[in-house]
Length: 272
Image (cartoon, rainbow, N blue to C red):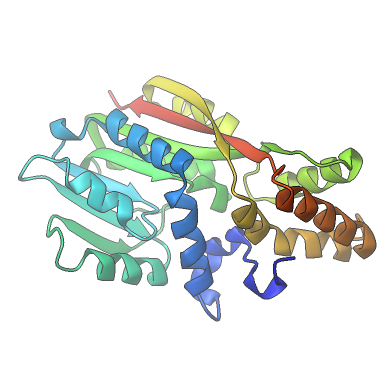
């Protein structure tokens, strides 16, 4: 069984600056983005942004800055990308990774609820796996609408935790655990809500594509430490039930039978 010390709850990214050691969180984010499915999502986001037609791009919730650099490479020569993240740790890491590569990128600390730029400052906005960490999703989308110029384009991707599936012999316990994780998240259903929220914010030409994303066993277990501990604390399940469930899942994995994943929703929208 994987040692509990190596497990990381990815919900901690919402408060990464408070982490005693952010390195495991950063490694988890790198692992997740390196998966073939997530690389495919990233490529589709780049395609839908239509970057050759843009001059100024906002990467809202830029994280480690990898996507900002990828966007900058597709912009016209005079284009620029600004990454904004609420985490000082993430912005520092993104700035360090971008050093000496592309001078058309810059990173700054800021809130998605009050983006530190004037109205109509950008042609494009990318927002990936951002709203799941923020309780005021409509306010964030309103900010995206505000900072885009007329004719601007937003592309977003969010997982829907309510679609998570795991092949496990104990169906009742699996159902209890997955429902608990979904219902205790800040935005457990944000994926399915994304198209409606963008339309309600005033965007037009809203298109939504559901994308199944297999989850890696190790990364899935990274995310489960805190929820499983909280399930026991809240007396939803007993400690022995949870330990047995984890061991059964581990046995499936070791036998080569692990299957799990979630559906994410990729949305593109335009501001008239």
